[in-house]
Amino acid sequence: MPTQIVELSAGPIEYLDSGEGPVLVFLHGAMKDGRVWREVVSGLESDYRCIRPTMPLGAHRLPMHSDADLSVAGLARLVGEFLEALDLREVTLIQNHWGAAQVMLAEGCADRIDRLVLTACEAFDNYPPGAPGRLFARLAHIPFALDIMGTALRSSWIRRRAASSDVTAVHPLPTDLADDWQRRFTDPAIRRDLAKVLRDTYTPEDKSRWAAAAADFDKPVLVIWAERDKLMPRDHGRRLADSFAQAELVEIADSGTCIPLDQPAGLTATIAKFLAG
Image (cartoon, rainbow, N blue to C red; front, side, top):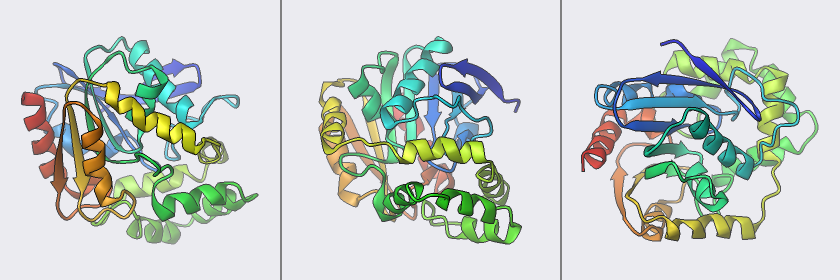
């Protein structure tokens, strides 16, 4: 599928666009790109227009402008700008790992969103997610730490080891995707972008404000949580569903954070049922 590019204020954003019908926009997490959703999209694109932007989260191909705002709030606003640039309306926003939607609600840039599907994502005080996420953020503050990681990933052996120990997944990641994602982190400009995200100085008050914004969203929400998640606390799924006015919770067995790759068939069926309703 050919990749398309839209130029936004922060820089160029690549995206995949397939199918026709009501619009679904899929967001990925750190060290992944829009292709993480490929198996889910293959089961939905016959009935829906599926759009998958690749955000600047460490596995993107095109670096952002040097002055781009890549704070957590800045990234959320960038998603809103993406929806506006493509003139997408009545969108179902489907996210995994990254907790973009809650921040978009708090930042007032979710007016084009009609439904949410929140799958195993950051919420409440869990930014960055889990002990591994917090360790990664701390490394970003140590001079040259990310550069050392990027240099190491030039080795195919290191890339295979990194893919096999990916904390987001229970099952092995597809080799082609994992290797490509690791290779992209060898680019200093890509590491610079992710370092901006990881070094964001948001406060506990910011996280409370993001969480509170859910109460004002009165449209349908589906929360999907993974039973073997190492990054997202098990109770956050129920708490997240309870924070919205119209939300249901579904748990997926034998999956880590990356449900789109761990359990694509079950995830697709769950999303399809929600959309049909």
